[in-house]
Length: 110
Image (cartoon, rainbow, N blue to C red; front, side, top):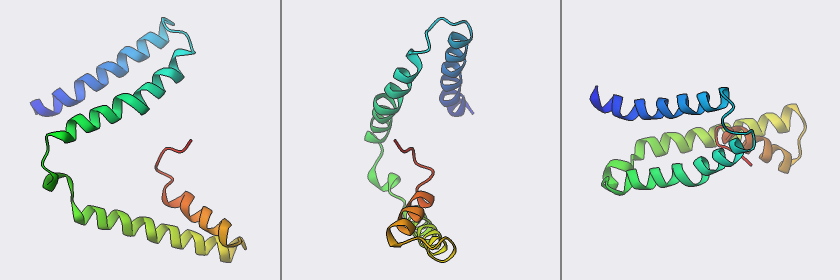
């Protein structure tokens, strides 16, 4: 339980501080895109690398998860591409893009 609290409490504390700063208008609206870019492109990758640096590779690489994830993406891509071809009469490029959009829609796109 202590491990859960030490991981969750700081994250929610930062969220609460950010909410309070926005609510009290301490920071201007221009700070939010800059802060979002800092967290997304710099802080989170650094945290991920620092967290994974001390873990043995055997604990990180889970082949069952990688296979299930890859098969799920491939099935979604193919099924959506076929639906695009048959239902919407897309050309090959259009159906491939429709499939790719559905398969990776959970990732952030720019």
